[in-house]
Image (cartoon, rainbow, N blue to C red; front, side, top):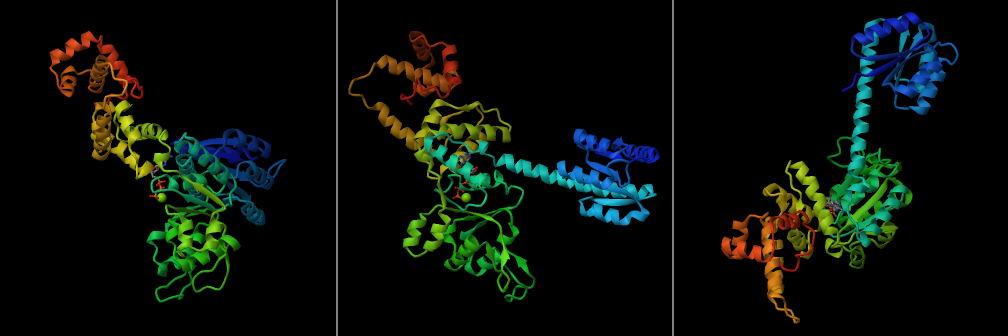
Length: 476
Ligand SMILES: Nc1ncnc2c1ncn2[C@@H]1O[C@H](COP(=O)(O)OP(=O)(O)OP(=O)(O)O)[C@@H](O)[C@H]1O
Ligand SMILES: [Mg+2]
């Protein structure tokens, strides 16, 4: 880590000099300014971590400088230097956001302790900021993959919703379609990002606990309520609450949720006071809420309140064009994570992924790629690295397709050439293995490679382009 940078603003040369000496000895990088203007210029240019600011300065006084610093850099920590007889000024400075003050004349040791504490705060602030930035980029739109028309529409709504920070959102989609991911993107790309994102799974919430979990309780509200407790909505104040599997929310709690959405207040269990809560509610579900309403399991008024902005995330089988894109994205992520040098997926693998129905949606695809990368040792993910249900089922139907003679007939030599090229491609040009796959001897393979003019170069090229579909349709 770079040394902390400290700016000393004082018109007394001796103080600037003695403080600089002492602080530099401790490894800090020190800047000095003899008046407010100079100090402000340095704050702008150098963005120091900490400013030691004298109250009495020629020109702009310390308080004015402090105000200006806070205007354009509210994050910087400021310690005021003040004379004994100007205590009330120091108090005023604290109100303006100074971190602490030191009396003049000062004891160097005390100054050092004060600076150390202040820098601890700086460190913490930086860590929090870094964490927030990480979260924000981790849950950024760029990590949500999809190019099909139906996903484009989803992304467009998500962007709009992130910008307007109050609307309630209802996310609907099968398990594994990305509801969680999108809820987090909405939060971390909205102006609420610096406040908490809290989620609760309504499925695992027994009715007896739900109310106190969501809205909190007062001390003594029930036998186990030994102390007062804030609920999820209060804790998430200013941020976002994701109510996952809202369809499972007990009916009794649904009316209280409606109250929060309509009036933006709630009451703790056993409490009488209305507590103001400012949260955005995102509700997610994989069931059809309209049906739940008809079945009397879900309040109709709440359903309409939640449905202000409905976002439906289509299952993966309804956006097959996203499959190769997502698969490649996960290859990138997991080969990095597991330190493997996997380049991608072979054309046949992609074909198999495209034909599969993905009942577990993107989550299932992610797991399939992760597994292939952990278990495989090849440059490209090959069909035999896929789970049996994908490999066997689709290859069976492919085989059936393949062995059926089309009405217009075929050119047998073309078929043979394509199969040989595929076998060589799959085995990265290894003729012994390719011959095995084709059920012929190596000599026969060589003879036919020559006959069809299939050189090594061609084999490697077809392998380097795993999505090329020149050979597709002749699956082995
Ligand atoms: N469009 C996408 N781009 C990249 N990753 C995605 C996408 N959609 C889903 N994922 C990934 O798939 C996994 C499952 O997604 P997520 O947990 O958001 O699904 P869900 O709809 O909330 O599922 P469930 O209903 O089971 O809670 C996560 O690892 C997520 O990051
Ligand atoms: Mg989820």
